[in-house]
Amino acid sequence: MTPTSQPAPSQPQGELFDSLRLELRRGCLVLAVLTQLRDEHYGYTLRKSLVETGLEIEESTLYPLLRRLESQGLLTSQWREEDKRNKRFYRLNAQGEVVLEHLLSEWRGINRAIEQILTRDPNQTTSADRKGE
Image (cartoon, rainbow, N blue to C red; front, side, top):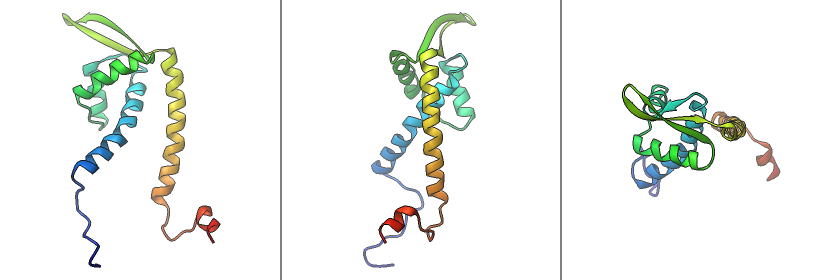
């Protein structure tokens, strides 16, 4: 270890990591919520389905996201009584379906590229590396 290097922390902490983690999760949450709303859900069942797949989301994050997606014209909602309680049910509308399909296409492309980057042998040269030669 050189005098300027520091041991890598076992668990990143602090505001920087929290900020980067939040940024990473935001886009993923939008995609997950839109995908789940191909079927009708109210907030509780939507959150439960996301948590069951391993994607934790707080109510304080989910409900503003639902309102924003609805105001952007991607969702429809309807108040109904169920089990003697009024619940707001959300579902992807036609515009939301189109946007979701385009987002999924983008996601798949990004995912393929990131997967290549993450699994690439660091000793292997790429065409970008060879351009600098």
